Amino acid sequence: MTALTLSTAAAPGLRADAIVIGVAKGANGPSVAPGAEAVDKAYDGRLAGVLETLGASGAEGEVTKLPAPSGFKAPVVVAVGLGAEPDKDAGFDPEALRRAAGAAARALAGAKKAAFALPLAEAADAGVVAEGVLLGAYSFDAYKESAKETKGAKAKANGKDPLAEAALLGGKPRDKAYKAAIERAAAVAEELNRARDLVNTPPNDLNPEAFAAVAQAAAKEHGIKVQVLDEKALTKGGYGGILGVGAGSASGPRLVKLSYTSPKAKKSLSFVGKGITYDSGGISLKPAGHNETMKCDMAGAAAVFAAVVAAARLGLEVNVTGWLALAENMPSGSATRPGDVLRMYSGKTVEVLNTDAEGRLVLADALWAASQDKPDAIIDVATLTGAMMLALGSRTYGIMANDDAFRAAVHEAAEESGEPAWPMPLPEHLRKGMDSPTADIANMGERMGGGLVAGLFLREFVGEGITWAHLDIAGPAFNEGGPFGYTPKGGTGTAVRTLVRVAERVALGDLG
Image 1 (cartoon, rainbow, N blue to C red):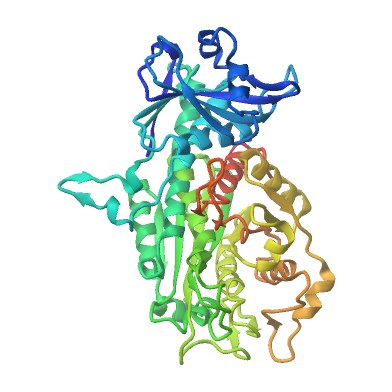
Image 2 (cartoon, rainbow, N blue to C red; image 1 turned 120 degrees about the vertical axis):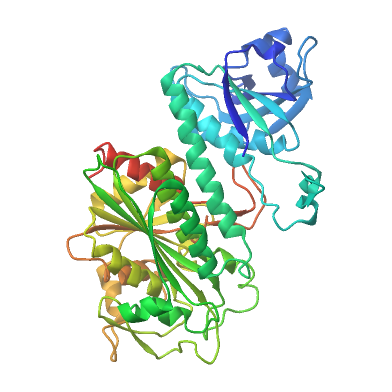
């Protein structure tokens, strides 16, 4: 991962491959953002005009490279757009700083060191810039021939390694708040990038057993208690949902419980993640063109895993338990069929009308298991429905809950983290569509509002009196387009930062 340092050095004398500055979009053209005063001075105060001549406008994510002024030890200045210039007394939006830092870090792939002279009005700004750098510098090259180790040295993937070091100019190396902000950013970004790695790993290498092994190794490293239920234990426990989904695969399902406990905790949280390591749709096979990215159907479990480990690394004063419901949904002679009835861990029976509505089945068992611990709140995370993508697009996830105040609090945590999300309802009239003449409930209901129907199904398996929220991350969990800001192509790590922020706020007594 890119090394981070806080530096009080002046930009002209710093040895680096590039100096990164911010450019805002002003009413009369681009304007140089705070933090780059020394650079602007070296251009005789004409840097904004030079950038405008080069076509820069200050638009968010825009990257413009130009030769550094005479006397600078760095050869290149990289100007990155911050979007609209803020009001006179207001600072730059944290997400604008995060995205700008990410875009610059991505553009500097192959560089050994870059100095970031972006606006750092306070320690929190250093944290978001650091986070943007670490997320923007991410790359996944494990399966590229050029990335293999040769004669003891790692060859460069695509000719360029990620940015090796970033120095944050204007930071205060001896200030406790600044140091804490950098350390937090490093812990969260490293675990989020681990979630990205898991999502990007091909399903032939990441089946439920392999995912469980990754979780066990991380738990051992960070002092987290771990329990793994295999097929035998799941059968003995009566986890019909997880077993039913995994019945068609040669790779058996797993339920992983990760428990981080703090001696100072007054509250407890349970995070539940959908972990379908590959989703073919089962007997209700997905049509051609819908299978190619289904390795990402475990992104919810990856986010939960990363969030629990991050909470442990940060030493948050809250107990956090993660439940990873892992299975591979495949068609075979042993697969669950449409029309089959499964008896869930809760004792309820479910008529399976569509085997491609499998995520809610594994989550139902994990939600009921999490409920038995009687946590103060449960949040589940899942790439659950295409309907949520139709409603909110590919960059925003939906939030449903059985408590309006909690839904609002989770939404606020998402906004604070820079993760686009939107509160969604759970209309009671849609529940009737899941009535089954054969079982207690069917796994499908009305087609319209399918994402909300899925939320209503999950609500049936939350213990009485427990506050619960459901995050449907089907849209933003996997980026099929080009990279932008600090978001790469492929796995994004969506929801990790929201979950960590929720845990932080609960630990501080600011959320429920």
